[in-house]
Length: 83
Ligand code: SF4
Image 1 (cartoon, rainbow, N blue to C red):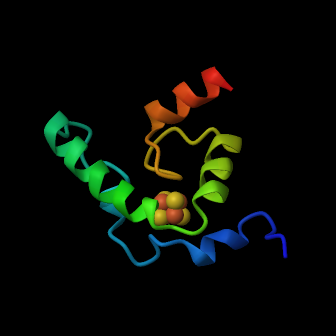
Image 2 (cartoon, protein in one colour):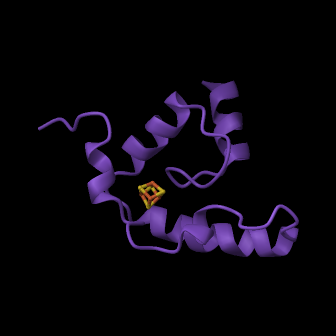
């Protein structure tokens, strides 16, 4: 059965997780802290059953910040340049 628009979000592995893992809480976040934070978030994404839906939604909405579908904003931008 196909999921509609945002139905996938109810199956998100990140539900209940710290939002601060997926978004920087501090614009002055050190690079090392960002890398570590994003690795923790991406680990959750790696086991998420709706990862493709999440990434597609983020690409469709041109999400500017955060980890979506296991990719940060720079990785998503690079992906759209390739596709
Ligand atoms: S792919 Fe990551 S950000 Fe997207 S719903 Fe799953 S756990 Fe959350």
